[in-house]
Amino acid sequence: MKHLLKMLDLSKEEILSIIDLADQLKYEHRHGIAHPHLRGKSLGMIFQKSSTRTRVSFEVGMFQLGGQALFLSPRDLQIGRGEPVEDTARVLSRYLSGIMIRTFEQKEVEDLAKYGTIPIINGLTDFAHPCQVLADLMTIREYISKFEGRKLCFIGDGNNMANSLIVGGLKLGMEVSVATPEDYKPHSDVLAFADEQVKAGAKFKLTTDIFEAAKNADVVITDVWASMGQEGEAEKRRSSFTGFQVSDELLSVTKKDVVIQHCLPAHKGEEITREVFEKHMGEIFEEAENRLHAQKAVLVKLMQG
Ligand code: CP
Ligand code: NVA
Image (tube, rainbow, N blue to C red; front, side, top):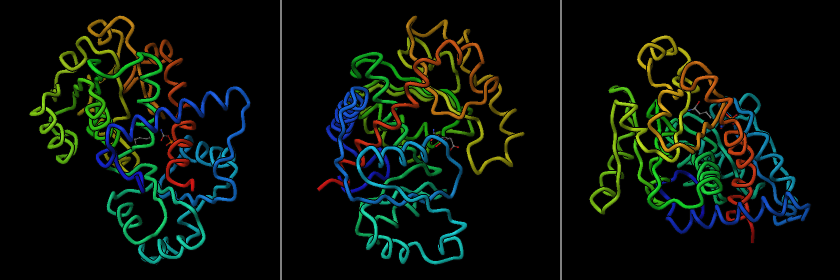
């Protein structure tokens, strides 16, 4: 594994080895055992979109690993004035040990990896959010102990989270079901991957019926109706997504001890009710904490040695 660009690039073994290392780093962190595996290394972090969790967890994670992180705003970088991504990648490769980038187009992240000579980490694009999904899978295993035969259900927009969860869940042997409105399906590359998996015996269902998707689910995951960059569509989306909500009524058809995940930030009253959010905040904030541990595992795998 040279980069973390999208879940489609990872094998089942690579995903499991990241989660295993994340569990170990979490244990060490909780017990005050230092792990300065990246002493002397620097991570550049380019953010073209806002962030709370990703920014803080990467910055603190690099510090805990004995290295440092640099917050690079496009407002200050020449990239914001049109310097090509390929030149930025070539230059930054000479100063840094790795780059984390949050941006719009997946192609920009793939181009950084193509032209640079250091590991590139996708900190969210319109297509994918692999860092979040690695933390989600880590959290899911903490709560339900195994993946095989367990059912993961995603309700809402076929966005970066849906795309990455479908791939991650299927790769680990989970049954995956997704409910989206007709015009908001996951990306065609992801649906093609799911089709291949079904031919090989996996269980995958895409529907517009949230109750069908959630039936007997062990894990229910949702995300905002309008992602970053779609603020202008918020009004239209609010009407298209009416009913695509994780509520107590929906949870009456899942397993009784269902685990709820939300990458945050949440719009309570839209994709999830306040009641469900508050009742399940234990696992939702564990998921947020696990961003730190899962990303430290990714950083160590990519940047050590
Ligand atoms: N879940 C997530 O990526 O959060 P931020 O946008 O705050 O980084
Ligand atoms: N789908 C959301 C996730 C935020 C972490 C977005 O892209 O804005």
